[in-house]
Image (cartoon, rainbow, N blue to C red; front, side):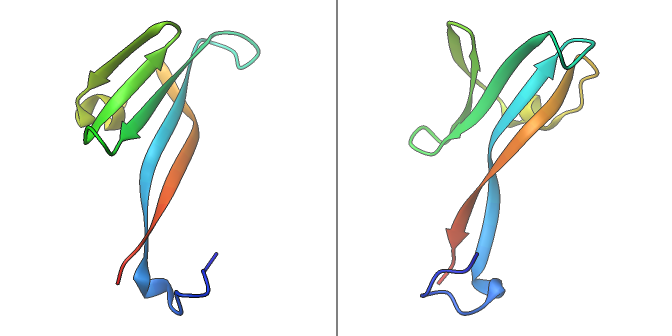
Length: 80
């Protein structure tokens, strides 16, 4: 959606901010991990149960048959 300030879609950019991945054979079971981009540290952070650690962008974007992106959240940036 456009804010009152933004009058054109040309001034809006969406960037991937969070990816929730499912690991397992069936959606009814398995394990979920989340990769979140932390703008303060300018890096991706993986949250896997009690383990939280940074990881390279390539680990978030590369295909792996063991994990399937389940939800993807985007952050809206308004360009001036």
